[in-house]
Amino acid sequence: MTETVPTTIATIPAMTGTMGNATETISRLPGDPPAAASVARMIRVDHAGEYAAVRIYQGQLAALRARGKADLLRHMLTQEERHLATFDGLIADRQVRPTALLPIWHLAGFALGALTAALGERSAMACTVAVEETIDAHYQKQIAALDETEADLRATISRFRDEELEHRDTGLAHGAEQAPAYRLLRAVIKTGCRAAIALSERI
Ligand SMILES: [Fe+2]
Ligand SMILES: [Fe+2]
Image (cartoon, helix red, strand yellow):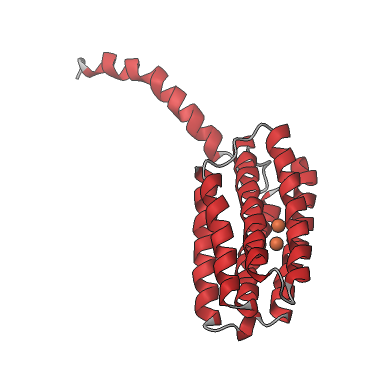
């Protein structure tokens, strides 16, 4: 028995250090100010999402340039470019590391836009609905997680969310639901977007 005493005493300082960190993590409750790391993750993933959105609309325009919906697509592209410019600014101001996956989103975003548009205008609109629905849910979660200490960021995300919902409504108003295999296309794109969000938060 006596042999175990020194060992126990020796472990106390190390354990206190570990427990101190654990207490810090556990003591954050819903409603507490979001940790800087979690805000940085939000900015990283939103920057990635807006970057991909620009590429999707560029891909759709490349495929549908001379067609009737080009003006609509150009309008949505202009808004996405503004969203991206804002997150470019936030990445720089707050020294957030952008996702390492940007080169992938550069290609994948354009390909998604071009391929869905190649299937037809209604498929392009179905892609818009799927993407914007996913971004809406994603932005809603962030708006709920941000508090007064990040009121400006929360207002920015809230404003962008309103425009993403306009894009979704534009898609619905222009035949998205009449696209061939609409439900399947929408489900596949939403799954892909959710995976891209999860990856861009972490990598
Ligand atoms: Fe956007
Ligand atoms: Fe959008």
